[in-house]
Length: 258
Length: 303
Image (cartoon, rainbow over all chains, first blue to last red; front, side, top):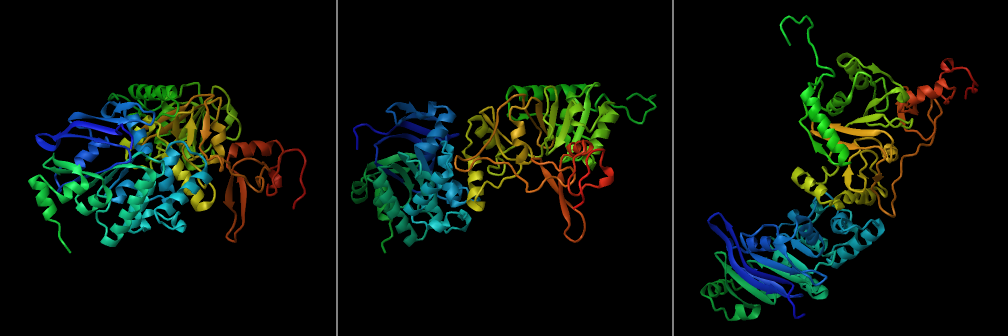
């Protein structure tokens, strides 16, 4: 890890009218670091994630991102064109429901290749070779490259979505409940895959999840949210083994033991 | 209309009222100023159904003057229903001269073909467009496609071409083949065969596109770059035909298949009827040309 963060978030708040989405969230994210945001549903996790990924504009607060050239840019002051360019090159967004992040009516290969074509790659053979490579990295058979994701299982769709996001070598990936709705054995494989990719590529990631086990496996640091506010943050193992805030204690003790 | 008028119906020149023509001309001018950009306009009800060229008719009605000579083609032919009725319509409501000869026309309204004979400066080609948005079948949201045009995000257009190659081994799109205009906007050239795409490139004629149902007008001014999208390792190609036109023997033209009988008999003939007739009048023959129709000149032995 370098001594400069990748993302600086300061006093970020989002209000829906008088209702609080998230309030006064401040943190730094370092390159290669995985930060988990946990909390029950309605606690503002997804609102926070959408604000950070500029899919939503916050009511107040700032977020700055260190671009590849080392320049700091304030996210909410960038033009829409710049934000969208960032979104499809340097960032990735993995949706809970793969149908939101994939083009369901075009083949798996084209799904992976879309970002390459969007940044100007015009060589079919190269695009296809990259797609084959990425499908194998997410454990999808090469002979499924021309199938539409409609014909894929939930776990395969999620892996395809990950490949589609990582193909341009992003530095920061946002994930919204990446294992939601998958059965446990598929979840385990996906987590294993994600952990490998994050380490190999040195990705920074912000993972929103309500599943503490996912947070434990993937993240180095975590933030616990309740009613739009961060109630506790720290190293993942510390927070889960020695929760301090009453709500975190409740959350940790609510895990079902098998 | 006043009460003592004896005509059953009286029309303003070229059917549309002056305010409407003014509005459409403004859209056309804006379209010419931003080549390939789809300009919204308040499309009017026309005395014909959508899909029959309401957009093209409105554009023609707005630019036509009493001295213009109009040609209308439908799939290259001057004698099909749509072409005949639109020609008759303007003959009646604008009292203009009409023609079937490409060289004589000042305005050519077309459905899905560009005449084989090269157009010249001063001519205007008016296209009838069903779906002006080239990204429509890839991205159904109009708000999103407009944003994509604005931000020049055209990666998705290549996704379609990629899919073609993945499925068919080559770019299988044969009509409505997307083009990039003047290095900026990606445009649907209307469902013309891709055979005609190279004719749009740096054409001396003004090309106007009208979509009545979708309420969009766009334009390619004379001598504008029009480049068909492709991949480096799968370059753009036009259709080629194994045989010349059966009637006039022309090669390197776009051919239509015509069924001759119930036993599988068929022939390929020029889709541009004016071009074919002219060649035959000049003494060219295909292998199925009726000999009685041939003009003076050499006669080929029957095969």
